[in-house]
Length: 59
Image (cartoon, rainbow, N blue to C red):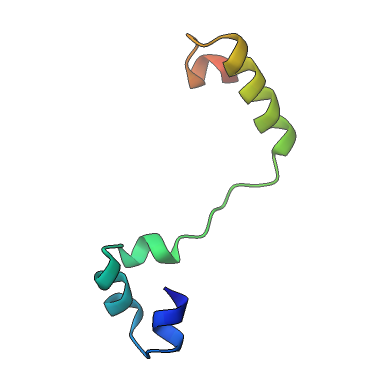
C-alpha cells in the first residue's frame, strides 16, 4: 500500500480500492495497551477451559 502511494503517486483511496481494502481499515491504529501479561494468562485459561467464553474468562 505504502509503495503504491509513495512510488506511483496514487491517493490512499485509489490504492485501497485497487486491492479491495477500506481506507478506514488502512488508517486504523490499535488502542490496545501493553497488556501482554493479561493476554498470556487469558490464552492459557482458554487452553485449559475451552468451553468458557471470553466474558466468563474475564470474570
